[in-house]
Length: 196
View 1: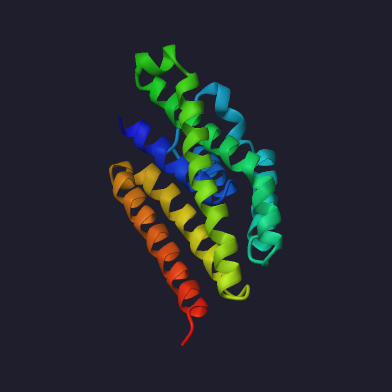
View 2 (view 1 turned 30 degrees about the vertical axis):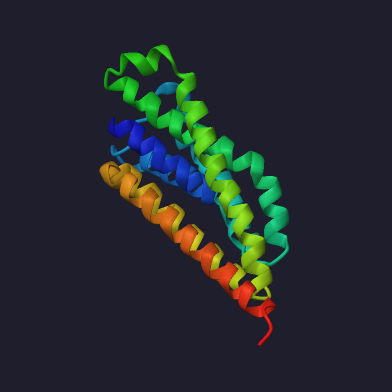
């Protein structure tokens, strides 16, 4: 159960930023005993792979802060973020197999499907909200929202690994934050349209 919560949290984080959960899992597997990856996911802790993920993360951080460029980046990330979600969910579910999860060892595809679906859902919410934020703030909100998303991805990744029981609480909090942000933006747009 905790491995599933870890996978859920990491997939959610991947929907916000594809590279942060990959880097967190890979670094922790490489440098600590906190994350144990099975053989088929050992590549994730390879130094070269971590270096490439780090470079991609830096590019993502910069591109996602620039209005309009962030929307183009989000189109590209429509493939990358769900794939990342599938990898991190599967890696953690596969790690659960090391602890004796018979069902997951018989159905490894479930981790991939869940990870892809969760990351895609979060990504689609992000790509829907971002143009609204950009338009309503004349682009000034893009770097702020992007920084919050990056911090959320890092926080969710760490919580998923170290305190997986809190993942459900964090997902509800993120959903409420997204709902509040969209509602606030819609109210502002409606106020601008209505005659005084």
